Image (cartoon, one colour):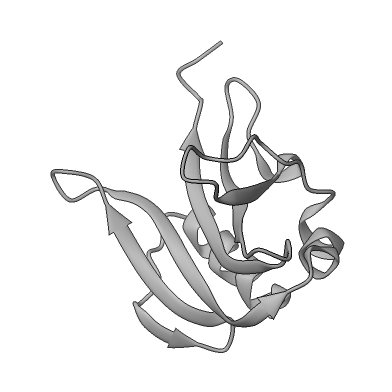
Length: 114
């Protein structure tokens, strides 16, 4: 599953949009900004997944504060760009037991910021 997530991430890094629908990694949904540009890709995993499995591919997770609605998430800082770079950041939405149920692949372009 993580190998296919990495393949999706690599395609996004090259500017290629994946097809929506079922993949081995889960159900892929393209989320667009007003005007039609791609904002991020949501991959609903077929089963809740331990963060250790994702960390093995994307590095150690960090945990931002809960949302006002109480939802928890994890980010994988090793996938985030530094100022002046482009990267596809990996985030995970967590269930009540702290396992990933959705992986978000977000293209982040900081090339114009220094």
